[in-house]
Image (cartoon, rainbow, N blue to C red; front, side, top):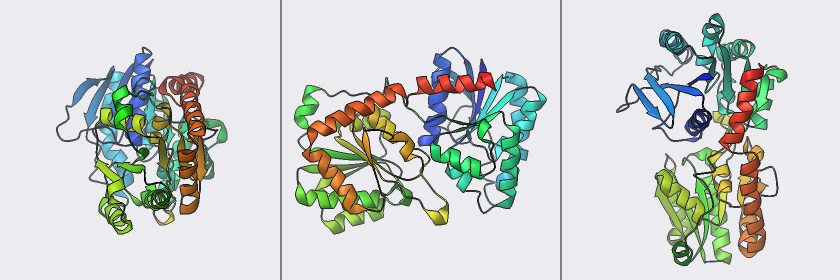
Length: 378
């Protein structure tokens, strides 16, 4: 099958949404499909390139027009380039990374008898709650699409609330690459790792709840000093978080790594003992965690996980491989971390269950089979 993915955010930008399209496109290409990704033309990127078995076509997505009504009108600017791409590639399926704003171009796919789908991550629906024009466009898009893929149970709920027909909304969770993210620790690494490691991987923004994790870690550290917290990522909250660490006097136990390479990231997962992501909902910004790909990356490496009971995270932690907690409850979070430190056998069982869950559910091979089933049936 010839498939075109329309990714309005793509690498070299780093994040879960960017990983989502890359993961699906890579897996589809490995299965023998002819895959194209239409992506923004960032500085220092080639107009066309081959990557992981699929073709990337880079064009202007008019990202400079992201304010007010211009946010939605970008689709008009983009439509000419989209039409040229459809004519040149003639795909059987077009799959948009988001519904808005470019999903409105589904009418071009219908004119060419091309099936059209879009994914919904969560924030992309909440973002438009206060925008009547966006809500109107979204309803048109949901009616015109062959189907939409909700990356979590929460995303499906938001879609239905936005007017989507339940029979055209397909829950397809996020995943990861089992061949990259896997349990592996050399003898030297075991010997060099002297302290119990807690890890989080995220953008350092308010929604991710890293401040709550630091406060919980502080309480745990008072009970057990043989522990370290690794914070992998960068973002606007970094200085405030470092100030909090300094204020609590735990500078020697908290390591901010900044941005890391993929190989370094995998090593962090493999060397940690617990992974934590306690993302909170930011009501004033309409922000919620869509799923949490870093959670399943840690699970793939055989680690027990602790996540917030908000947004899409409960779709990643559905079984006995982790704990769900109130993202604002420092005491409960510290208790769960301390439990896993004090009960290594339980932690080992949870980590093994986490790896098994990724093998069964949260990997791109399984996920793309589900997606292909919907491509063919709709």
